[in-house]
Image (cartoon, rainbow, N blue to C red; front, side, top):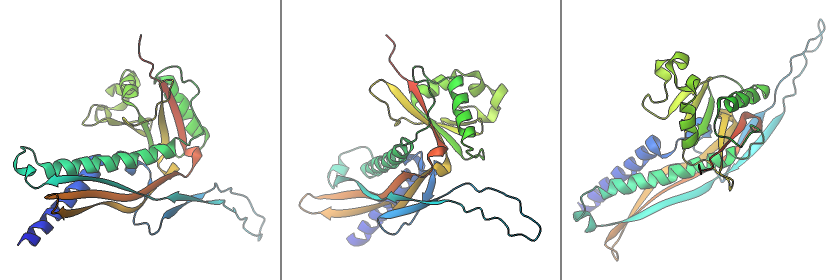
Amino acid sequence: MSTTVENSFAKQFQSEVHAAYQRTGSKLRNTVRTIDDVKGATCVFQKVGKGLASTKSSNGMVPVMNLDHTAIEVQLQDYYAGDWIDKLDELKIQHDERQTIAMAGAYALGRKTDEMVINALSAATTSVADDTVGMTKAKLLEAYELLGTKEVPDDGQRFCIVGVKQWSELLSIEEFSSSDYVGQDELPWQGSQAKKFLGTTFMVHSGLPIDENDVRSCFWYHRTAVGHASGANVQTDISWHGDRAAHFVNSMMSQGAGLVDVDGIVVIPCDETPSA
């Protein structure tokens, strides 16, 4: 009987961790190119160059584009998030400790997934010039032009992630926040902190890098610019330790991310110097 109870407990906990990770753990995984079920310690993403169309003479040979293929290798790393659940402690607390640890583990692994994606984005070399002011309409338009100059596809797969302060600054831009420009259904306060603007999904993220000069790096990118590989999605192992009279709950995953196409990313540096 006890074995059956333990199996049920483990399955329920695994389900809770997986659901929490998918729902609220990672914000950025679905904004980049992802490959699941990778076998081995590395994953290779293919970057294909641009083709060139040419003419041919009558009965002549069709010209070959000779597309440039570049293999981008991403290393997978193993990550763990574990904690103890004391058997008798569960009798003394008012909240559901199992669910609390499930959520905490999912959040921790989700933050690690986003950290890997952000580290890959940080390798970008194209940047908006002015880093002495916060987020402005002029900066948005400059970044939009830079993406266009790089011929980044405007196909609905562009994303822009900004910090919390930059999101509040975006809300002061009438074209971004007024239904007169973007329509009632695309207003930024409609259910979540994400919206469509200039053909791009804008999202707020609290984990973007900030340097010693209080300059926050925001990123405007195409989905295919970053590759995310998963050898093992979030899974959970639960073991009973009699010497502690407690279960040890360990959530884990094996993932990695890397820069695939540097031309598909524009950095928008924004000053966050506190007011005097």
